[in-house]
Length: 331
Ligand SMILES: C[S@@+](CC[C@H](N)C(=O)[O-])C[C@H]1O[C@@H](n2cnc3c(N)ncnc32)[C@H](O)[C@@H]1O
Image 1 (tube, rainbow, N blue to C red):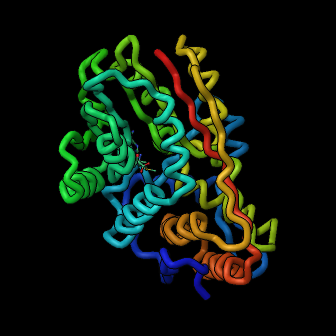
Image 2 (cartoon, rainbow, N blue to C red):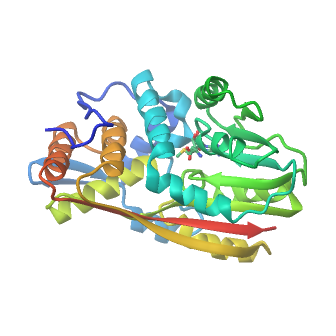
């Protein structure tokens, strides 16, 4: 039974194909060493021992997630990522969060904007085509495939004041002090080295520039379909596949203080769906299959869980929520 939504077709997970990336293989090998293998309610869940890892390595809090190696995904998985990013780009509550921070920015005429981790260019395109914006935008991303998608969408939409650049280093290619605004929108939760992202933002930001950091406080993510323990466990495992730094938005204030960056504005929204799932349906339908492919969830258990989520949504019993946090900082 599908989620009740016009926008998503539930996917069939199927058998996990060969792994797609060396990093994912490394993740699985590490997982196999660290995992607790649990038999619960008829399905097997492979989990990292996240808490233990955090205690051991207070500074190294990240695990690889799929967003660190998008170009290694198979075509179907890549398309799911593209569809998911584009869905978020038109999902009204998500758009409202982006517009809320953009509304607060007083950009100079001809502003130069750089988005780090632009993906398909949802945010870069939105800024470039915003009413009253007369500047230029550069979006950069690790992924050649997503940058190609971003270029094609900008071309189709007729947006000419935006360029996209694939940068395997994760850097922007921008000169020092050259940008009036640096946007880090749902990037920092995914990277191996959040401090390096902040350092790049500070390097390219002009003295009067703003740096926006927007992301999910993914440690708050909940998808509830009536089996709280299993729901929480699967969500935690899903996060291991798709979010390297689920607590990073709680750490940003401290990271800014340590670097002498002033925090000018902080805001949080709770994105919540009660009854029927749309945003969260897209989330789990897009990424649960990837958690299976990464060896973190066993196929039939994942299908069973997805079935429960769909049934809860169909019968109006679904609950999902996640906090999203916006920061505007000044270097
Ligand atoms: C969740 S997506 C967000 C994309 C876009 N900002 C949006 O909101 O639609 C995360 C993006 O970060 C990119 N990425 C991951 N690590 C990166 C890094 N170190 N430097 C630049 N981009 C990176 C991924 O390729 C992916 O496109």
